[in-house]
Image (cartoon, rainbow, N blue to C red; front, side):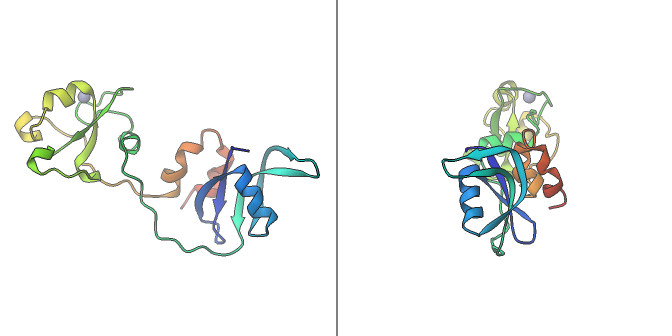
Length: 167
Ligand SMILES: [Zn+2]
């Protein structure tokens, strides 16, 4: 009941991920229809339901273009889990302020990068120029495409790929 279900808008745009229980409620109440049933059946006392994998809302929901939330996890994901100074892949990355906070550096997508502990320590509270270091690429907000927003689910739900591509 806690498996993720991809929710499509009426125009087939992927807009959300909910759990199986919520998806079945939407389908049974007529607010959504089953697009792809998943892996098994849900048995209740009275009925057997196909377990949904993808559902589609019957009515168009208008929502503002989503933004990727600015969290450490998302910064590391944007940067491919590699230090943006030395390029090392690491499981123990930190988040570095490119322009240090004491110099007015913001807590923003443009000023935060993944850094390995060694590079973060070496840079300290200096600017890149002062520390004579280089960024692999400029930092920017990742585009909130469907494949970016929902990409972390695709390993376990590869049947979603055709519904996510192109959005
Ligand atoms: Zn590094």
